[in-house]
Image 1: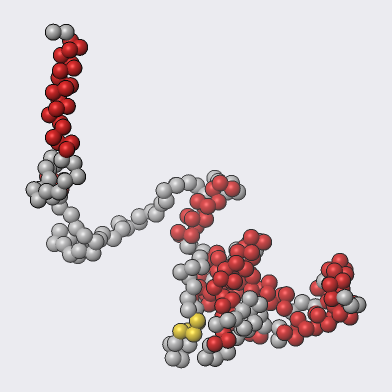
Image 2: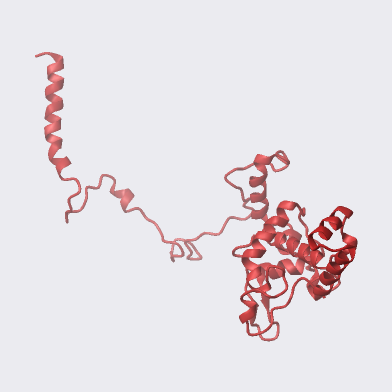
Length: 263
């Protein structure tokens, strides 16, 4: 018998032997499955937050050892890749995880006071992101212009304040500085006397940087509402005159109306 024939007969025999096993695939049975590594199926384990006698404090969830250093899946030296566009996401992720800057991540100075100015670079991208989020989360109550005339405000039990003027545009007032406005966007407003929540928190949808974008856009709304003729370039004046179809006095009138609306 040749070697090739022997191999063929052996393969055929194995195929015939395996056929019944293939035919049983997908069928249900009450018999327990075969267990080739029972010690892996029955290994000792604990569920999260389960009590155990193994540790002195009886907690299965173990605290991190002292002096543990946090690290990410993409460990890198942020100074070595500073300015690299591809690394910006990783660097920001690391910075957000550490959240060590009180001004950026808590809106406060080292002494616990609200900071006066936005602590991150105010770029066009930041303001446009703030505009988008303001339209999604803030405008329903405060209105797209921040004047307190949103759709929800019209049906509210008490007037929703305008945030483009008054105390919220006055930086000499505690409620008009950037750190406080950022805090309100993230944490909401609570009545100190009754403890009632007058405005919900939005930190579940606004990151720290996104909240600064909302503050930046709010400042743009406030500035636009208080703008007058003197804030326009000659080209802008000419364009506005052409639109309203009047003379330069029409431009001044528009500026006066804006200033009045901001008060």
